[in-house]
Length: 322
Image 1 (cartoon, rainbow, N blue to C red):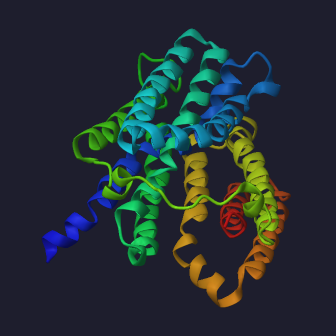
Image 2 (tube, rainbow, N blue to C red; image 1 turned 90 degrees about the horizontal axis):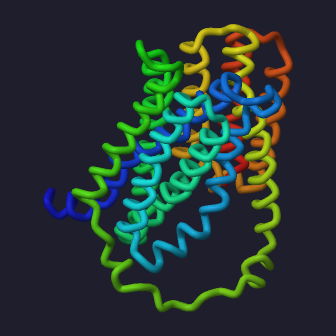
Image 3 (tube, one colour; image 1 turned 180 degrees about the horizontal axis):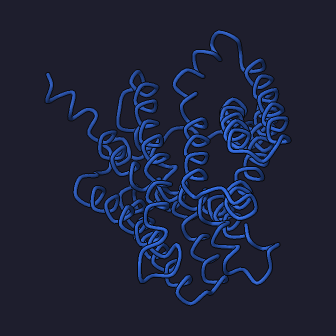
């Protein structure tokens, strides 16, 4: 019985472990992208461009990632993207050695491409279990994101000032190590699911029918607004805390960790809230929480204000990005 259960959840276990290490890329760039930008950007106005490049990288690779894996399989797609990400992390470290802002932005864009592939993990998990097991499996996969939310900023902070290396170079060597562990897990243990191997010959809905759904525009609008506000506040926070208000990197790390935890932890019960209250009420609650974030952030530039604003931002994003 136990052996059967383990085999049934093999893909979930493997991808969950791989995501614990692979997903560290996102919080490390959130923490350090702007800080590195302030060090090597030709203009202070460009300091947060590396994080913008990461977001653009995610968006630009989302559809190509899906199309590529439909041709070569998820295993080949995941491994290829992971290998590119390892190279990108080393490229970022090299950029800091050379103080090349352009090279660093390119590295962040490539890491964004990798994150787009990483977001396909949930589909691979859903394909590997029965329909009844999908909600629970995806909730368990979410735990990996929480581990990465804690691990990523910690790696970035602890290796930020390694003796004999330029500032933050060690952080990207640490990221390369995390990505290498993820690569090895996928290489040694991940196999394409039986459903994927069989292919999908089911009917395909036309795009016009998809966009004709009444709730779709509302969902897209809420998601776009929440992501835009989150990107604006989250991107600026490390620079504002550490560079402008001279708060420690340790404090900045804790705020970013709390923010990312607030993004994902509500997912464990947001489904229950939606079933009880309905989607519209949850979206309204998300907007209210976003307003609370703005009010808190409008206060004094103290640690508690940063923390409160970023936690509210994370919860509000979760409720709006359904």
